[in-house]
Amino acid sequence: SYELTQPPSVSVSPGQTASITCSGDKLGNKYACWYQQKPGQSPVLVIYQDNKRPSGIPERFSGSNSGNTATLTISGTQAMDEADYYCQAWDSSTAVFGGGTQLTVL
Amino acid sequence: EVQLVESGGGLVQPGGSLRLSCAASGFTFRNYWMSWVRQSPGKGLEWVANIKQDGSEEYYVDSVKGRFTISRDNAKNSLFLQMNTLSGEDTAVYYCIAQGTITLVTDAFDIWGQGTVVSVSS
Image (tube, rainbow over all chains, first blue to last red; front, side, top):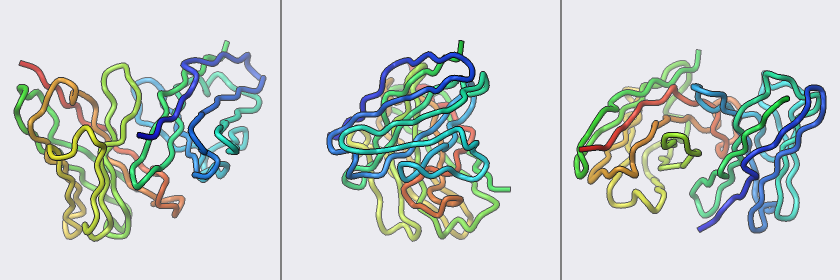
């Protein structure tokens, strides 16, 4: 079965750029989505089709996808961005999530 | 306001059954694929199943095939998940999701409900 791999944790200082990677076989040939989940809340879509932002998502969130790696980039990271982030893609009509990355802003 | 409200979760013994429901409002339910995603305590997200707009296609993660059945009632704007032969590994928060309602991209999980808790234990 298809697998997506994320680093368990990433740390970033306020105002700096955070990058979270998601690796999967030929992931660049698929579309990647990213979800943000804060404690006790439901996940929220922050990036779809590799690099598109839903309305209401700040411009500091961006995405890319090439080769075997998709990347979520948060520019000018704020304390409110501290959360778990999950990548997701589709393979053979089934959805697959990465294991999640805990982003710490300190 | 677009809204998904799950219900039907609870405590069930191993081997038992449970039926989850999801009430949709604020969008034209019959026009969108719908999914269930679960999250075990302290763990990540796992997609469970989804169903096409008219119910003609259903897909499942391997671990629930033959035990879970997804269905929908477009007249009542409702999504369901019938769960049979439950085990401790099915213990999780179950989220109802509308695909592409905002982005108009079917592959995106646009709208999530608040989730309903399923606990499987003796």
